[in-house]
Image 1 (cartoon, rainbow, N blue to C red):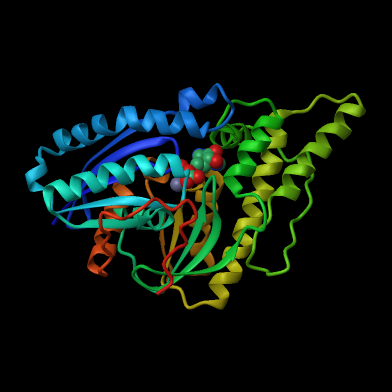
Image 2 (image 1 turned 90 degrees about the vertical axis):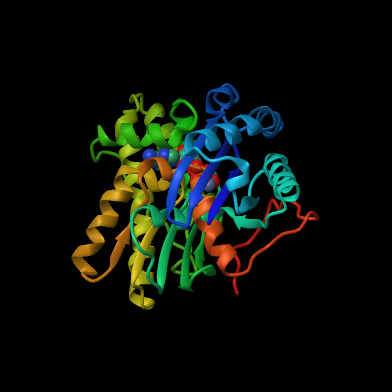
Amino acid sequence: MIILAIESSCDETSCAIVKDGTEVLSNSVSSQIDIHKEYGGVFPEVASRLHVENINIVIKDALDKASVSLGDIDAIAVTQGPGLVGSLHIGVMAAKTLAWSLGIPLIPVQHIAGHIYANKLVGKLEFPLLALVISGGHTELVYMKEDYVFDVIGKTQDDAVGEANDKVGRLLGLPYPGGPVVDKMAQAGKPHYKLPKVKTENPLDFSFSGLKSAVRQTMIREEKEGKEIVVEDMCYAFQHAAVDTLMERVHLALNQYPVKTFVLAGGVAANSEVRKRVQNLKEVHKDLNILQPPLWACMDQAAMIGLAGQVAFDKGYRAGCEMSALSNNPLPTY
Ligand code: KG4
Ligand code: ZN
């Protein structure tokens, strides 16, 4: 079965061709990041207009690279949400038009499910599974007893970890998006600044806004004392505090739930410290199957929507011409 998948939830316009739910024949991505950099963040109106300009180009490119034609496609998968509603609508409209004109099924895919199923690129997902979802918009621990049934057992009470990374980057005068730059700087930093430990009422929940404020307070204090901020060391302190918080919750969840596979998902899954610490889980949880997507698949792209789309299709998910984008689209729970 060949699926043409479309993703346009934020600032990447992407189309992929995925065969039998495992083989990515092509994955074409048009990133708008250089344009949004000028605004210091994603400008939703601009993002929607750029999706309109790029959507047909990535669809044609994905078909060409996979050496398939529209007649070879068996179903269309598309991100329904969550995301920026204006951005989502462009992908949804393109997908509906293709499915309707080709007379083939349309599969609605939840964006976070896509990030989780990106791990099919590197191994088999055996259930029960625990996913640490870390992106610009989400920070969640997701427990799955079976395919495409999701139970959110912990979530952030304020900022997502990627968002906190980007805000700390801005505080330190680093370019947008701050996450990858903070990560790079942290690797050159030393333990120097101390940031407080984050506490939450539900031990599996997360909180990052206090950590971001602590960075700001430390900067103000140091500047008052006439000391120059060592950016690398501040990045080191923030990165280690943030990853400590993430890993503490992962350890707790692994002790509470019978997990066979642990997966990383979302843009922050590209973080060097997270990836290192996740590998270390093996020391305590010897039989755990640990998967992390390749770096290219951590970011938003349509290959993951095709991989998740096949599972959703097998589970009976279908949409009709009335399908609409959903900016707050929860993970399916049944
Ligand atoms: O999943 P994603 O591409 O978009 C959303 O669905 O949100 O994630 C983007 C987020 C941004 O906040 C970006 O700064 C962060 O992922 N990010 C990183 C790294 N690479 C991307 N954060 C920390 N370390 C990285 N290496
Ligand atoms: Zn994403």
